Image (cartoon, rainbow, N blue to C red; front, side):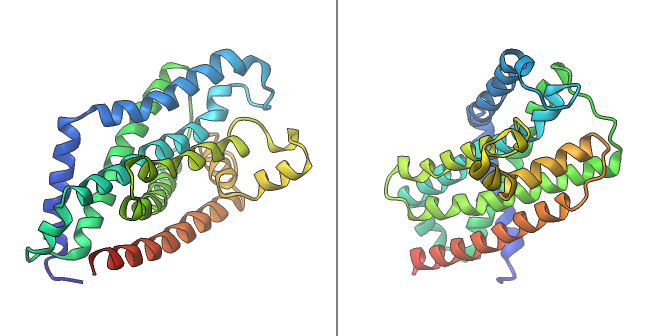
Length: 253
């Protein structure tokens, strides 16, 4: 790792964040869909869905938070694609900068932007009646899970951002990620699902992550869900990082 890595990453991060502050519609667009879904499910479908919870907004919020992240990381692929097409990467390579700092700046920008989006969605949920008696440690655990989840999905986003040949291709990968929470315990208990779908829902990463966050908010024992959630996030992060760096090396070689 270059000795200039941290300094270069900080400079490039500042550049990316300035672009976002000049175009706040990125974050606005990211939160519109999750908030619309929150309103729709709570006020339209919530009365007909039996979850065993007193408050449906409390039940579904963890899934909405994951959808918020899945929506937001599409912009990472978009920004990477536009930088490559605009020749920004070639310019940075001609300068004495750390090569990996360019990618890390985009990843950290995604993390900051998604955390802002998550805060906005949380504020809307509070206005809609979300309440939690969770302590500081539980809230820190939730934040840690969401950060790890965001990093894992962001490194997935880096791959199409570097390899896509069209703008549509760079962002289309996020659609299955947005849809995945619907096939989990995010909106309804998995025991209401038919056999094969139930097996899939109970053994895919979103269910363990949603269950862990929900139990932390509700001050319930998290059991093995939190360790399974962390294992999924860490595993996806490691694999995605490896593929992303390999794609990047091929791109700049």
